[in-house]
Structures are given as structure tokens and as C-alpha cells.
Image: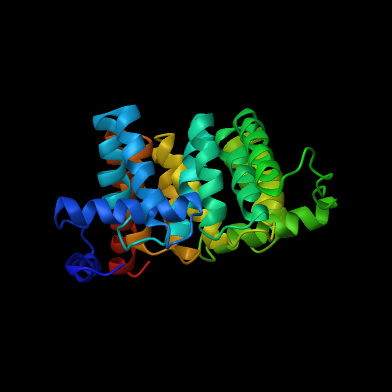
Amino acid sequence: MTDSTDAATTTGTAPDGTQAQRRRKGVDLLTTLSGLDPADAAKAERMASGMERRHGALGSFAVDHVLGNLWSRPQLSRRDRSMIVVAFLATIGSTEELEAHVNGALNHGLSEAEVREVVNQVAGYAGFPMAMAATRIVDAVVMRRNGLDRLPDKEAAASLDDDARARNATDVLGTLFGGRTSTDPANAKSGTSAALGGVGELAFEFAFGELWSRNELSRRDRSMITVAILGMLKAADELAIHVPGALNHGVTREEVEEVMVQLTVYGGFPRAVEGIKAARAAFAKIDARAASGR
């Protein structure tokens, strides 16, 4: 869809345009989220009207501002927005909304394996109870989309010995911290354990040695998901680590900030404000280090 506001969206600002233009963009998002035929604009229009009838002003805001404004910003692809929204909703246990957005994520180009891997990342950063609840919702969506009464057995994680797990963790820490960690697995593990005790041991062995080392998602995607989860949790100290890590993994500063823009709707402005402050503080620290030559 092309109109006079499309050129303006490349400047890094939200689409402003007219109300009619925002509505058209919102209907377009409804079309792709719902997996409708792009030619079936009338059905998407009816869906938008139905949201207003059911939810009143909230429905109008959802179509015109959430979809027609926020989701239409160019800083992230629809695929990436769906990915982080699934992470947001799984983190807070928003089951009904998660079901809709798992379906939308699959329509926006994420594979079933990638959606499941988002949930696995949630297990590490928001907890297994949230991830277990989310995976049941993913199962229900997949069964409905495929007309199944039961899913086939899923593939177990690779069985790693201690040495393989330690090598994996050391490699992840090396990319996350931009090469500023020990390349020796024993030293890397002892350093993490010394800093955080048993928490550090489990982080080294499970989070870095198992979770981050899986190939179903790129480290760039895992970093973006992790930043999204930490923003939702208002975990500023962890964002101070994972925002630079995201940059090391190929996420741009603009994309990091856009995760927090997306958070305004799914976690509220207070969380998003704290998140953007933490991200910019991390950027400033990186810049200061670069200026000092360290």
C-alpha cells in the first residue's frame, strides 16, 4: 500500500498522516496478522469495525494507533515485531492475546520452530512456568492451523556432555561481550560462578551453554527477544548487559530503541520509559568507552 505518508515513514518517525491513512495501514496490518488474502480488504475492514463494536474506543485505538501507527513504523519488520510481541505476551502470561499473536507470527513469516524457540528463550529469562503456559498455546494454534487433534512427539534437546556445554557457553559469552571474556572454558565458567554463585553456574551451563547455543534462532534474534523480555520485566541491570550484547549480535541501536517503542503498547509507557532510559544509558557507556580508547 502506497500513499503520501509512506515516504515520511522512512525518516525514523511514526507515521503521522491523516486518520484515513492510519486506518488504511491498520486494516493492512489486520490483513497480514490474520493471514487474509490481500485482495480481501472488505473482510479486514469488517474485522476493524467489529473491534470497534466490541471494544469501543479501545478498538479504535487498536486499529488506528497500535496497528496503523506503531506496527506500521519502518524500524522493524513485521516478522520482528511479531517475534518480540510473542515474547512480551508470553512473559506476562497474556493467554488470549498470545494465541492471536502466535497465529500472526506464523502469518508474518516466523516458522513454527522459531515461534517455539521464542518460548524457549522466555523460559530462561521470564521463567519456566510462563514458558510452559505459552507452549500449550502454541500447540493449540498449530493444531488448529493444521487441522490436527494431536501433535506428533516433539524432538528433544541435544544431549550435551559437560565439555561441549562449556565450549558452547564460552563461545556465546565471547560474542555477547564482544570478545572481552576468557576464551578458556574453565576460566569463563569460574568467572561467572565467582560473580554470581550458583546463579552464575546455572547461567553458564543452561542459559549460555544450552539455550543460546541452539540453532533454531540466530543470536541476533535471541538478543532482540531477550531485550524485549528484560524491558517487560523492567530489569535495568540486565539490560545494561544485554543491550550492548544485542549490538554485538547485529541488532542496531535503532532496532533496540524500537523494541521499547513496541513495549509502550504491550507493557505500558512506564516500562517503555524505563527501557529506553536503560538502552540509552548503555549506548552512552559504549560511546564513552570508545572515546577513551578502552
